[in-house]
Length: 185
Image (cartoon, rainbow, N blue to C red):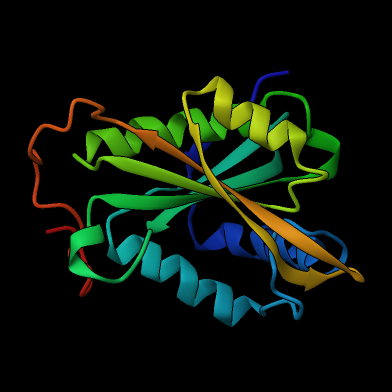
């Protein structure tokens, strides 16, 4: 099995919304508790595109298997070289290389845009060992843990922070970074 990756488009939003809604209602990968509708997901999709950041879809055997995107890490100008990565994989496609393929592609596309940091905020540290291991395998390092910061599914949840530094030597930026007012600077 190998995942085929492509840029997401508006026709993918129903499948993206359905997968995310499943995680909102029954999972802990997000701290949202009310599933956003298609219109809200469209607005999120447009916001990522406006920043010139990747939003990718994975397909396996022609079927939607998951999605991933990068979004600005924080809104302040000094953070304009960092993005947060988000990955969601259909239950039947997990542990089959889909998440890895999506994360590898996000790393490449982020590096190609001259950005420096990728941040992973992995919720429910107790049950997210596979996600944490994947991030470590692709070069992310532990950056800290927010302990018992979210209440969902009848329990307190941690968030493990991981970071990939695309320029560990700390050279000055080669690009102006993200324009946090709307697009790529």
